[in-house]
Amino acid sequence: MNYYQKFDDDFRGLFLAELRENEDFGTQLWSALANVSWYHESDSENTECGYSHTGAAASIIGYMLCKHVVRMDFFLNDSASAGTVSEHIANAMASKGWRFKVQ
Image 1 (cartoon, helix red, strand yellow):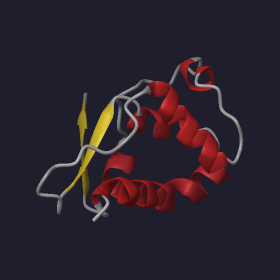
Image 2 (cartoon, helix red, strand yellow; image 1 turned 120 degrees about the vertical axis):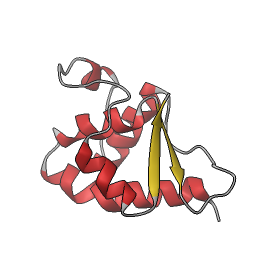
Image 3 (spheres, one colour; image 1 turned 180 degrees about the horizontal axis):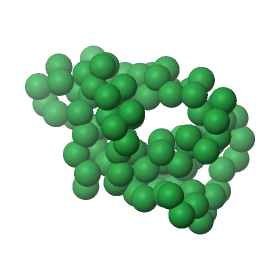
Image 4 (spheres, one colour; image 1 turned 90 degrees about the horizontal axis):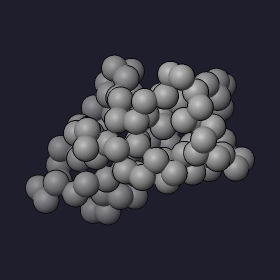
């Protein structure tokens, strides 16, 4: 199984609609990607998935919004903190078999 693709598919599937309804949710999503490693419970090799680079994490949020996002868009938001996974995101990802570790 390609866990990188599964991670992307699950992440987008879980959060795309909510992000498009509320772009401010992008800050929480960015925080859950930047400097966070995600692992799937069925992966015996513990493949590290995610986007540890803060700019790459912002690019994924921009892709989901179908627009260019400059990573500073998130850094300038006082509520943005790399490596912070909200309970909402952690629970949703856990429902798909994902667990996280902050780097």
